[in-house]
Length: 355
Image (cartoon, rainbow, N blue to C red; front, side, top):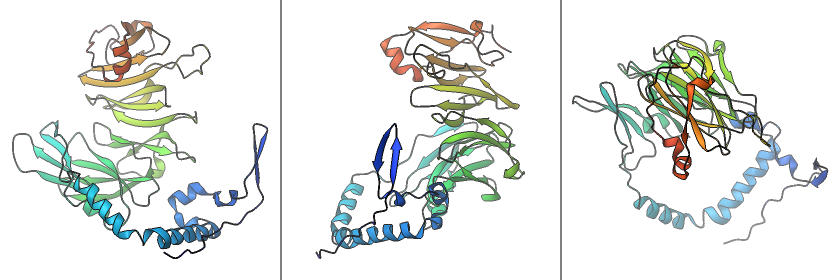
């Protein structure tokens, strides 16, 4: 193996001062100022930075990549030989269909399939191996609508983690030319199939906003449904298990705040219960939520706090005044409850707080 000279990055005087401490960083020029733009358009990377990175990659290939190619191939084959490649998930029944996904032997990406629950042939709704082609392909999942005619699926084709959402007509197998571009990959249908709620990134690649796209309209006119101003919180969107509510979840690594939208009628998001301040903690550090709703009109909400011995739980479903004390009652906390609270499946269908 030849001992080539590794590329050496030039030194440019530069310093950072934080908290009264100054740090010299002569290689700060390698941190592209327009990194957010580069995430979406790699060709916008500064030419000098690109030239140095290309030199590093070339050096790696010459000194390590090519000389160890056979070893890398053997390791890859051994790891692959221990994996069950032709695998599928558990069918998920929904209405007249059972939906599933599977991996095929020798393929990199899943297929999305469904089978009539009363019997019949399985249909492949989406084959990501076909959609991927030969270029980069990051799959962000697929979600069928309530009518079972349309399938929304999302993919990143640049490695930027910006996902385009495409709608496929399952009767024809044809994708609509209408594409929701540059989303954060989290999305959900409205119950009448007229709209898709989706998340967007801020300039620091943080999912922070939810928009609604009305099918058949321009994306530029999509209204903002929720926007999170706290830079420590991330936003996701989903649905309760009974499909009655769309969930907007704003969370950091310890706490969360949940909003609900009527999946049938739409409307403004309503907070389940705002996080309340406790001693020595920020105003949104006291609570964490987990929402499920396996029973019709009976959303399940669990609320946990590290400084409490009970968990307040809402008594019923449609929330007209979710923060009212009458809408909550407490159950005792135990070590088991504390560790498993997000998986609790409690059925409370009292009517005192129903709309």
